[in-house]
Structures are given as structure tokens and as C-alpha cells.
Length: 331
Image (cartoon, rainbow, N blue to C red; front, top):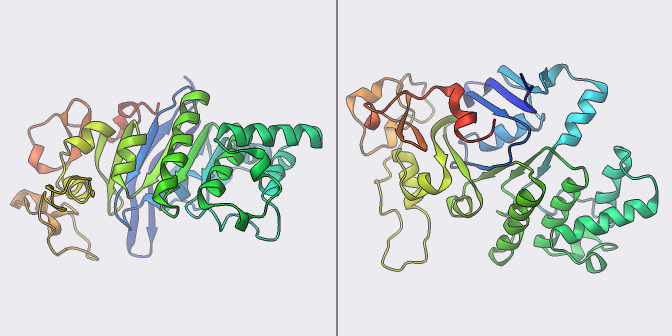
């Protein structure tokens, strides 16, 4: 049996009384290269999931494993390999740079740290090639300070930095939320092209379903730390099955003057926020809530390529949490 690259086994993360992520199992196998979007509003658990994947935080319950070994127990060479194989592109394209150094340093230091380049010239050649791979002109980018580049250039340079290490998995946490709309297409295009050319799977964390629709193959929708819908990105966004996903899709500002914002389900005042509940976490905001919602809804499969956690589809076939990774073509 092949050992997966990275595995979340019934992972839960709590901050005091608040559960930021609830009993999530995901497996990332080698040889699979989808782009999976993780979507939801602020506080849904998206960044917590990214932090767990990157080893920045430890789970309260469950285990995160790299090649079969728990992250919390890894040391030495194995930890170093993990740091190289799982790379990140962060939200703020300026905060990741030291303003006192030229941007070259952000590229050259990983090459030196992991012993990838054998000479300065080889390092220079690799940096040059990485810039070209993300659509940057090296002669106009290298040798400059961070403030001399645009937000889009800085963000694409971070993608180039990750690529230098030849990662097995890329975690992109809101990579376009802090750059101009005119540059978002360039950054997302770079991610998509690299995914296709280099077969690098990408976990794309976002609150923006419009960008998820254009870049992702599959999508996971989180609400208060729990998966409420998952499946093909095109199907989930074009025909959402969970009332929460319907709210998110209804809030997308499509370029259609005849289509009002929030035309879907009404957004109700949350009657359950901050209070523990054994029932549906979304019931307090749902316009379709019913008595059955006092119980915790199971995950079911209302469509062949969609799974949803909602009593509206109680007659649909059951969907086991362990199926999620294969369902999304991650493993």
C-alpha cells in the first residue's frame, strides 16, 4: 500500500471553547494534481486548515502525518524534507519580504538552505528560470527591493520561490485578496499553468467563490469549522445543494445588472453563534430550517459529484467522511 504524501486523520482544532476545525480527514496522494478550493466566510476554519497542513499549528485532536509520520514527532531530515515538499503562498505579498534586502534574497536563501544549487551561477540561472515560469521578466524583477515591485509581481515572485524547491503540494492562502483586481488574473493564471505543467496539487484557500470557480477542479465549503458541501467546483457553484453554499453563491457580484445581490436564500440573524449545539450549525441562519435540524445532519450525496450535510437531502445516499479524498481526486 502506497503511503500518502500528507494526511489529516480526524483532525480537530480548538481555541478555548471555539472549535475552529471539526473532525476533518483528508489524504493527499502523490501522482494526483487537482486544484482544490477551500471556501467559506471569515471564521469558517480555512486558515486553520492551511496552518495545520503547513505544520504551523498542532491539532487538538487527531493527527497530521507526512509520509506516515506524525508532524509533531518529526525531527531532522524528515522534518526538512517535509518543509521542502509542502510549500506556501501567503495572503500578503509584501509582509513576507524583508524590506532591507533585495528580492533576490527571498529566492536564493531556500536554494542555499536546502542545498539545491552548487554555485552562485547555478542559483542565478534557477532564479531566472523560475521568474520566467511565472510570467515575470527577470531583468526587470531581480535586483530590486520589494517596494519597487507591484503587488502582483511580489506575489508571483513568491510562487517562483515555492517552485524552486519542486514541492509536492502547494498551499495558497488567499493569494489574490490583497492585490489589485487587474492583477488577480495574472496570479491565478500562473498558479493554474504551473499546476498543469508541473503537476503540483494546490490547496487554494479563499472566501471568493468567483475565483474558485475559475481556478479550482474541486471545492470544499466550510462553515464554522465543518464541511457542509464538497464536490466538483463547477457543479457546487452552479447548482449548490446546501443553503449556506447557496448564500455564498448568491452573494457573488456577477456582472449582470438585472441580477440583484443576495437573490438566493434570505440571510437570517444567527441564533446559534457562540453557543454549543448538537444540531445543524447553520440552522440559526437558514431560511429552510426544520425540526429535524435540531439533530446533527449527516453527510449525504444528493448528486453524483456533490456531497452535502443537510436534511433537505435526507433521502440521498449516505457519504462517509473517509470517502472525501478519493471523491475529490486527492488520493
